[in-house]
Image (cartoon, rainbow, N blue to C red; front, side, top):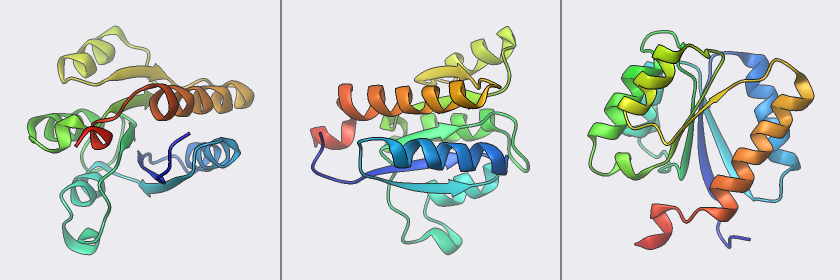
Length: 146
């Protein structure tokens, strides 16, 4: 287990999915701070520490929905992966779309993985816990390296 509290940014506009993600991460074994923004424009402000986010902590992991208001997830992903510092943060696309074009586009934009959100409540919780287990326990994140 990690010594530090892991910073997670959830970019999600569905209040139900936000609540489920919060619950799943609370039940997990990894101490974390979950920061939530509900649209792509707010995600960009958070990541670049603009406006009310000047004190925002750099996330260790980003959970990104694709279908967002203001700026969609593809645009957010593109901005993240174009920035020399932010591109090192793993981005897990977590979305309802299982369209092949969305999957290909996300990987073309250098998403670290693509997960289609399960509709079933219990399965959704399992998916969030497996993301937590893999990305926050098994994988060595860039912030640990420097």
